[in-house]
Image (tube, rainbow, N blue to C red; front, side):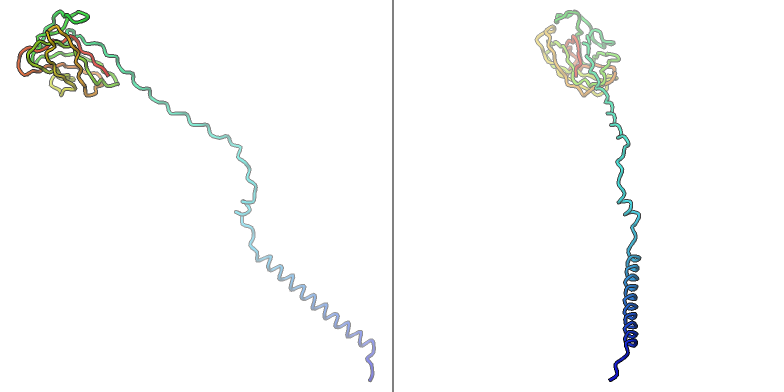
Length: 211
């Protein structure tokens, strides 16, 4: 059997080696192309994500000053009411003054009967309500009568009243207290009197409002 010549053998080996190299090169190109395709298909970073990755710089703006407290309106000051001497009323309707034997001396008003009244003009109650009134009274009558406080007109609804009974004498004095519907502002004050009949039933020395 005739052996192939070395030249022919080397030629075939070289050809096979070249084919192997070409195949390996093609495979490498395929792998590179595949990698490039995957890289292009990957999503790019969004602006929001980029913003999230940026470091946050602490704000150096000064904090706002605390709000100033709302000023409060001061509470009104109660009026210290002066004693109203009955004989000093602006009007004594059906009533007469006389010397009194009560503590402090001076005068009181008497001979009071149903339908009489006293009037005090421009009395200042103030912003803090008056809620009661003290009456210095005396009576030797056999019947009880009522004294009433009215504002601005003598026939207005009473804002307070009390019943006055016998104190033991026309100069035997007692302080009675009437509760009031709260009164503020400035008013003409009427002190009116009523009784079951027209007989005289009480004397009054003074009146004083209170809170």
